[in-house]
Image 1 (cartoon, helix red, strand yellow):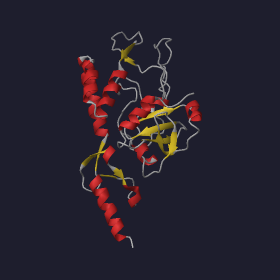
Image 2 (cartoon, rainbow, N blue to C red; image 1 turned 135 degrees about the vertical axis):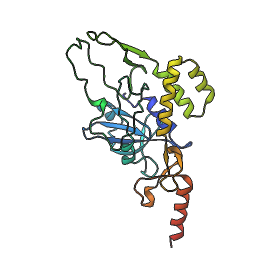
Image 3 (cartoon, rainbow, N blue to C red; image 1 turned 180 degrees about the vertical axis):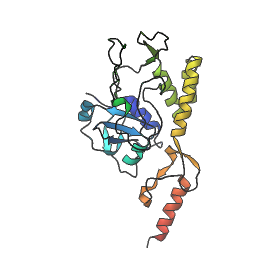
Length: 254
C-alpha cells in the first residue's frame, strides 16, 4: 500500500505544538499536482498515493504516525492559503537544498509550475544519459545526488552521492529538542557537510519563525497563531496577542 513517507510525518510533527497530532495541508496547484504541505516544506503526492489515502480533498488534515489522515478544522491546522504562501520550490540542482524534503525560498503564493514538475530540458551534447527521476513523496532510498563540478564540457557531469539521510536526521533531532542525538549525527558529518548543514539549518530556522503582525515580535511558527477566527486575514500573531484578542472578544460578547 502506497502511503505518505514516514519522513513527511516526522517533519510535519516537528513543526506542531507538542501533544497535538501533526498538521498538514493538502493543496493542489494550477497544474493539478497535489502536495502535502506544512509550515516549512512540502512533498508531492503521486496519484497512487492520493488514491491510497482515500482521495483527500484540499484543506487541513491531521496525519497520524501510520500516515492515516483525519479532517482537521482550519483554525487548528494550517490554512490552504498559508500553506500555499510557504510552499517551497522543490528542486534537486546543486545550488538548492541538499535535504530530501527541500526547504527552498518561501514563495509568496502557490507556484503555478514548481520546479519538481518540470522535466529537465535536453541540450545538445548532453549525451544519452537518462533524465534524473522527479522527486516523489516516498523515495525508495533517502539518498540524493547533485552534479560534480567538471571542466570538460563534452561530458555530462556524473552525480555525486550526498548523505541526505544524516542531515535530515540531525535536523529532526534538533527540532525535537534531542541535543545528544543531534550531536552524534553532526559528528559523523564531514567538515564540508557541516558547513552546508549549518547554512540549511539557518534557512529553516528563518522559515520556522515570523514576526507577529500585532507587536512585531519574532515568534516561532510552532508557537504562533493564525487568527482567522478573529476576522484577520491569515496573520501570524504571538501567543500574548492572541490571548489578548480572545479576551477582548469574550469581553465584548453579551
